[in-house]
Amino acid sequence: MAETKDALTGLDRYEEFLRKLELEIEKMDGYRIAIIYTDIKHFKYINDTYGYKRGDALLKEFAYQVTANNPYMLCAARVYSDNIVMAGRMVDGRTNSDFRDIIHKRNLELEGFLRDKYLDRRLKMCTGISIISQDDPKLDPETAVSNANLARKVAKELDDDNCILFDRKMMEGIKREVEITSYLSTAIEKGEFKVYYQPKIETSTLKVIGAEALIRWQKPDGKFIFPDEFIPLIERSGQIVEVDYFVYREVFKFLAQRIQENKEVVPISVNVSRVHLHKMGILDYVKSLFEEYKIPSDLVEFELTESIYIENTEKALELVEGLHKLGTKVSMDDFGSGYSSLNLLSKLPIDIIKLDKVFLKESTLQENDKIIISCVIEMARKLRITSLCEGVETIEQSDYLAQIGCEIQQGYYFSKPIPQAEFEKFMSESLQSKAEHKN
Ligand code: C2E
Ligand code: CA
Ligand code: CA
Image (cartoon, rainbow, N blue to C red):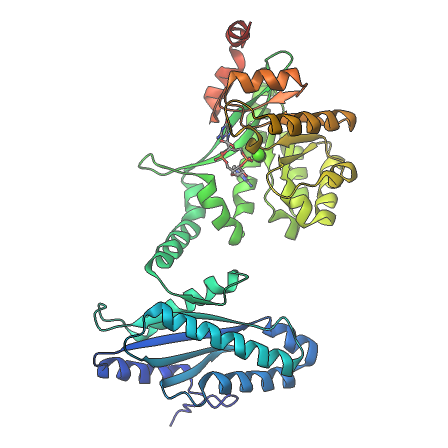
């Protein structure tokens, strides 16, 4: 007969647990069953620091504490490693969220106990709960467990809550994530991704002196999926590297073609995801693009957000230096959008500072914002860093920026991000009309 118990913890094996749970669901009569899926955050740290013996002892204790002396428990198993799942009968009259509160409190107690015993303050329980009730369309055991596991993953990402109830919205979020990440490569192949260009305007002449390349994903039905929706997902999966490389190649291709046709060219900036800092293949890739397309190196610029510099100053510096060696300029994007980093500005060899659009949130600038913007621009000038303001939407904002000496402007007032052909037209048309309008 196949072994039904887990040798280490004495709990059921997962297959046995599912079998028992199925029977429990069939027997269910007027009550609910809660699936409680828990793991220990930083468990690996115990194994690595104190050895496997200590890790095993902790797991045994954990399994015991979670399941022992619990009159409501129906069955429990170790799914793998430090993941333990338990099914329990829910006492009537208690709401799902009351129940969550009880488990939450128990987790805190257990955490305290295990922390004292195993001398590790970082130990933390993460629990997801899903509830099977009779009014639900019949839920199979595996789905119920996977729902609880999903809620556990959400709990693990949060700092201050270690116990989360599953709800349907989580499912939709995950479905969307899977939809996007599994289809991404195909979407690139099918040409659903396009690079749009948003012109950058020189304040003193009101001429186009560059553009930012921004990715656009247009589905065959014409609908756009915007970067703010899909980029966080593909950053998590690592696929942003593929998308960024696609953008870089398109930009190089575009510039090389214009040069070949003897047309005017302006520097184009591209965005660099934080994910590149993990592998740093980006430098070789960019180098190979310069070799392949043979365009002058000052025609491409790289934008790294302020948060990248703050999170990982050393790696960011390495990347900036690598890009400088290739002859390209580097900017600090979204400056002022997070915790600011004035001290970093003096330390990092940045060429351009892009003030985030938060400073221009009101069409008429507030006095306080004016003070900050003008000081940052003054500081940039003294540090010999080019200043650029993003998100310029009104003539008032644009005039104010001119008054305080902001060198470059970018925003809807001049143009939204537009397809390549439109940008080429934009470049060739004189901005005279705008200049006249302003005078
Ligand atoms: P970002 O780098 O800060 O890009 C500027 C964003 O501001 C763009 O949004 C642009 O359309 C928007 N914008 C420009 N002018 C105005 C304005 O006057 N008013 C307002 N309200 N918004 C304006 P988009 O294209 O939706 O991109 C959002 C973010 O997604 C970008 O922020 C960037 O962080 C990321 N992103 C876009 N394309 C790429 C890419 O190819 N690679 C990477 N890694 N990230 C990208
Ligand atoms: Ca940018
Ligand atoms: Ca920006």
